[in-house]
Amino acid sequence: MSSYVRSSSSSYLATHSENPQYQDTLEKICIVGSGNWGSTIAMMIGENAAKYEECETQVNMWVYEEQVNGRNLTEIINTEHENVKYLAGHKIPENIVAIPDLSKAAEGATLLVFVLPHQFLPRLLPQVKDVVHPSCRGVSLIKGLDFDQVTLRPTLISQSIASKMWPGFQCGVLMGANVANEVANGELCESTLASCFGDPLDEQTRRIFHSSTFRVQHVDDVAGAEACGALKNVIALGAGFVDGLGLGGNTKAALIRVGLREMIKFCKLFFEGVKDDTFTESCGLADLITTCYGGRNRKCAEAFALENDNSLDCHGRWADIEARLLNGQKIQGTLSAKEAYAALQSVGKLHDFPLLDTIYKISFDGKPVSSIISGISVERSHL
Image 1: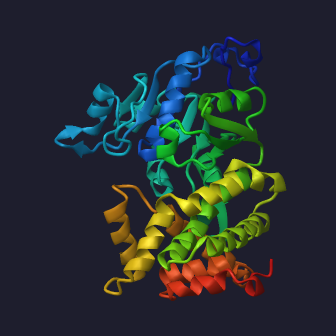
Image 2 (image 1 turned 180 degrees about the vertical axis):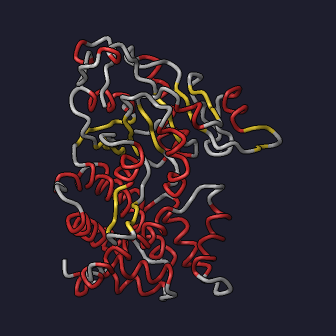
Image 3 (image 1 turned 90 degrees about the horizontal axis):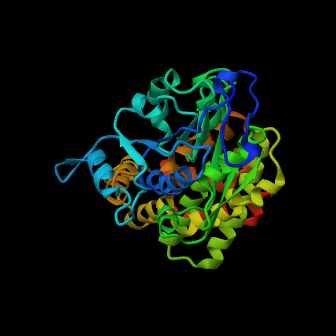
């Protein structure tokens, strides 16, 4: 697959294709997803697409159609330029066009930005595979892991996306300490683009997301960045348990320290080429800290600890909390906890990951929330 782009800078001309039919292809961006984070990232992408000559000005955003006060959500976004359900109070650039038909939204796209719960991907990817531009590539903002039922090993969602598109399709990731509402408010933050598209597409892709307040750095360690994005949500469940128990900053600091070390160990156990420097990027330590002090996973885990409702099984309790607290969003840490636990169990390594093991068993096996303390004990961590 190949691509040519046009830009005000000569460094963006004629990338890595020998096929002249792509030489003047403008970057055509489609955002797949429109929740809290999807609508937020659309703010950056829309502004950049409007000012960079290598990009088509219009950016399509696939929106799952919902009724809000008797009106279609797509109609509200396209007329009022605001996602009143998932990002109320923030204006989305007028060049962002909400489209309820995914095939239409993705038609001719050279860049797909995936930002939605990953359990929806299997039914959605066939709708885009045959309509995007032949040079299309992807960037996933999805924080989670897949689990291969045959090999019993974790699989990167970016790899799952690529495998369902076509041979040679490339998908990078954007991960970082990015609480959506803070980003939408224009508060300074960093993020990490991990991709191996090659020059100059890595830089062009970075520029599409980057702004003066949303500062994006590039690395080539896709596996390390993406696995961090999934595992930090699991550790954030533990942080929520700590908060629900009324424990202080000292305990949470210990949890974050042990959690980071288990994340590093997990990444190196299952994925090749992971680099130590990745863990000190925004996608690593910074995202872990942010998520353990804010975000939906910590919030829901704190509610799980406080409510201690035994009238429902664990799965039912999580579903009830998600429905009450998240306004249609999903808890990603619980699914990642299951996947991480299954992966470690398949290779007989659970004893080396006491924190991940304990978080899973509190979440799904009815283990007391207070046992989170044993999960972060130095004696048991062996790290």
